[in-house]
Image (cartoon, rainbow, N blue to C red; front, side, top):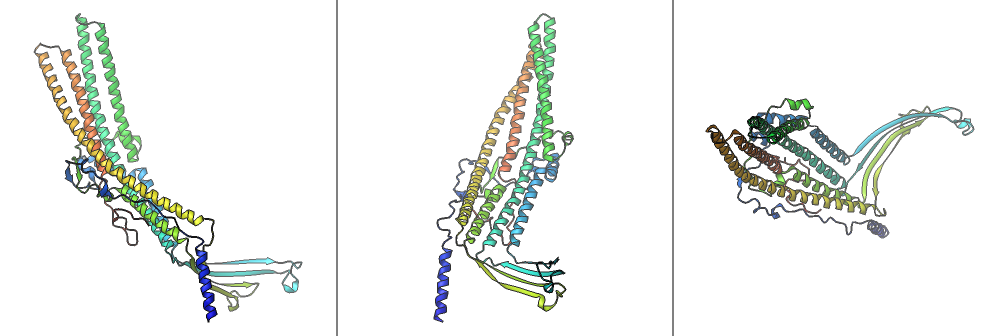
Length: 491
């Protein structure tokens, strides 16, 4: 009895010593996720009206039925969204495959083959010179016990990546809706540019006509007439450019809708849109990690990287599996189904890593680096998201001031045009002078149209920066809980 215990102790000690040959000592990740509350933004976002997060159908606030229909069409037919959906389904399939690896495996098979062995190899009395058939059938069972949780970690990592891919597909939808809205704003601005260009061409033609009359009357010379001709040609060029801008905006919308160029030709002129109110939610920046899909996806990838480390660590441990094999085999005319033809085997199997030239340590070091990369990308996304919101808010504040100043300039230009018209009708001033004032009014109108388009575009960018109405769903049972993580702990 004492001898048996001694042998068992020696075997146990030998096993532990061999296991120590391949270890994880000195390997660990160093990345640490930022706490959103540590990112100061109070001064950058001071003085704003508190507001709720954007709704899922945020674009309906712009009150344009045509825009609503275009975004719905783009969300249904945009090819980029089909690519994102396919990637999400691929990630889900990979997670299902990782889950299947955790369970037992049963397979069965059989074969029938025959051969004639020449008598030069086997004498006739031993069966040589005759055709003999062999029949074989089997059933096999195998199951890795996953004592250290490596396979479960691999499944959870695949689940995390699948969840990230699903959220990235939603992020693609938010981006598409924002791009359609921005292209629609550009189409409206293109029409406004066309109006100004057409008015400028009318002004230039009237000025040219008056200049020609003054030349005939001897009040001006050919130099003034040629200058008027140049202004008409320049106005015609600007009108052609405005028409091209409209065509380009229609084409951009056709691409976003996933349709041919003729689809853009059916679009009516956009109605005037109102930008979103200058406001941000009260729980910014902490709330960004739950409302920005790119941030939620980045957190899932951190979780997946942490589970990859668990899988890599499990590879350093002994692997235990169960297997069983049963079957029937017969030669020649022997009945395959008779009892003597049966065979079977069953038993556990264990494999112990002893020496692998550093492969497992290299794999673990790679997983540690991948985790640090995922954390760094999460931090980068978080910092970028908060600064993007602050920059968009600052841009909207600046545009509000610019529009207010430009409105004063526009009002002054309109008053100047009214006075110039009154002077001309009273016989005090010439109509040519009035047309010069009219040109200044057209320039002021063009600047105002550009500023209003920028304000609308910036308003859409702010909605997108706030997550575009995205709301994360609660995680499914058995998946890593990424929704409650504000800072990712090291594994």
